[in-house]
Image 1: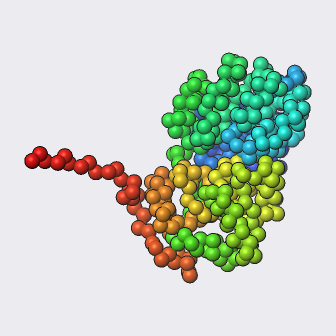
Image 2 (image 1 turned 90 degrees about the vertical axis):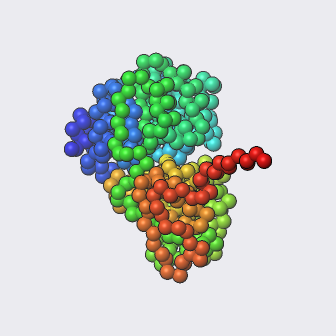
Image 3 (image 1 turned 90 degrees about the horizontal axis):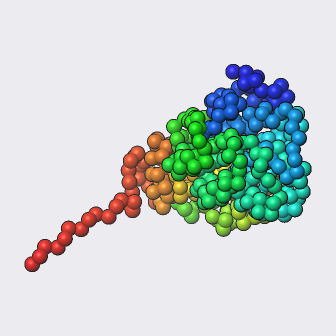
Amino acid sequence: MPFSKFGLNKLITQAVAELGYEQPTPIQQKAIPAILSGKNLIAAAQTGTGKTASFVLPLLQMFSHKHTLRAKRIRALILTPTRELAVQVAENVEQYGKNLHLTSMAMYGGVDMEPQKQRLIEGVDILVATPGRLLDMAHQRALHFDELEVLVIDEADRMLDMGFVNDINKIIERLPQERQNLLFSATLSSQVRFLAKTAINYAMEISIEPEHTTAQQIDQWLTVVDKDVKSALLSHMIIENDWKQALIFIETKRGAAKLVSQLEKRGIKAESFHSGRSQAMREQLLAEFKAGDLGLLVATGVASRGIDIDDLDRVVNYDLPEEAADYVHRIGRTGRAGAAGEAISFVSRDDFRNLCAIEQLLDHVIDRKEVEGFEAKVGIPESILGYVPKRSQPPRRRRPAKKK
């Protein structure tokens, strides 16, 4: 089924074709017609399945007819949880709509407000924004919502994880009652469903795959390794396998800086990516990584969503995430839109509880491989689905002492 079957403007399908999109993904096949018909929508699909195009393409189609915007007005608002995702979505809007006379922009905190205010003065068709900066602009009357036609809440589960529920509700209170509402999420947790009930009436629901699954084309495996030799193992794998590019996830900012320094001492160039770096630096690093000018990026969880790179070969979990669902989002940076990818996890003894939670969530055991010369001195038990480590088991009730 080609994209032209949706009845999209030829200028849109031409741009999509030039980007190498041949066939719509399952989420696109279901979401695009629903949105074009004017339905409110709640949609769930795993990371890397093309959710962004699912709502951006119909927005472009709906707005492709001529329309004069008044000052400081917007026609569509796309809310995203992070700066990186806002930038990524805005780039997609520009790419898909490059042949149309529509305006768009990304608006987020951490940078000077004045240039963003100036861009809003003439009005913007599609605004991609993080909640905090949007509310700041609204309080300063830098934009108005009376001409808003469509609200999109993107990565809703992540939005709630980051504590944006109050901001979202404040934003919704400012919007016109008559609008189309779209909510996209990797998972449909109870919290996401509650948000959907408060924000969206009479919505159609689409769920493409069972929640918390990972793309089949991703080769997932782990290696058990002692914690003190993790950096040596990573260096060995980079050099021996001649890795050209990898996204390496680590839990802390301090750990990211330390690992970059350890790699540098072994002649391996890498950069750290985390919330402690300036927005300008983060944007520069992402641009270099996407262009292939930077091969190794050591990132904290801030990069688990919002990095969309074609043909990213592999993701490495140097540290396992504390939250099992974050594993799915991390490895979803590779194997996107049907491409092959590899996800490698370094697991030490103190990671076993997190590993059990991840495998329980995935409903399958992750393959284990040994790397010669780096066999763990302190092993971990074999994986068994449903196994609960002793530390996670509830304490036994003590029987009351017998009365003497």
